[in-house]
Image (cartoon, rainbow, N blue to C red; front, side, top):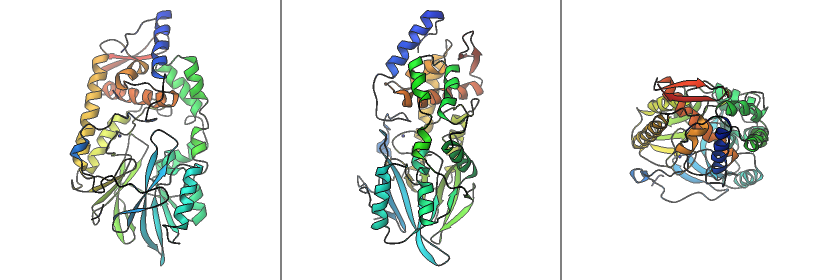
Length: 390
């Protein structure tokens, strides 16, 4: 058998600032289980099928999930404690080896697991190429290390390559400190929280110390042959700039990356580098690009377990975001900033890192409603942007 958000009335002057400090204090009181996404588990998970059951490959080992395709897991230093990577049998110019999809973050634990794999499960065969679904640290963290070690080319989309290079270099606009004025415009005034966020300027470079200096471009609709098997590139937007998923009709397998996850909904945020963005609409529209895939396709997600029921899960994601949009619109009967929306969408307590993503996601939902004409946007005398029903 072959086998991821749930108001407070706006006041002004000293009363407003006191109330907002109380809101932030509530948000940051304790850590929770997920640093980037709402970890309320999918209540409709029983509608999905898990062909491998509860079997998970132990660290440093692989598990076959389809012919010529192996599943491995790498640890992450977060509450979301793992990422799934995929090794595919390959041969290029008569040289037998592996193609790898995603890399893991640059941590000592991940490097150690890779050493174990290289010495064992990879059976002495080299990496012939490294493909990345997108630019986030858990996906490209060790791309430079692996590509250099095996003299392997790096394959990804143009936007993901560019953003990975920019963030690894901590360029202005995509570095930690650039987020501060962005969050201030959207209601964050707590000095301690802002200081904590500013201190994260080395977050991405610490997990992605090097990105290869060149790449092979992956584009939507492109066919990539790996081990003689054709894989179609399906790009998606909203979660990252130009996310790459790969679909093989011959294997009936979809490597979905972070676009479709079985238990949690992927983070969709408005960030400082694109402050007028509408990423939630981009994400929802991108899900439509999977419409022609069979419902029994084996989905290989970056987090969670391989599953079947792609279209059921996509319908669940649409319903989830529709419910969040309804909640946000209802709250905006009075003017609301993104900070005010966070406790509505995330009914749990968040730390500084989690709050940065929660703010981005709250703003993404506000922006979708704003672009749809359901909300209007006003900048107050305090410089804070608020949204209210149109």
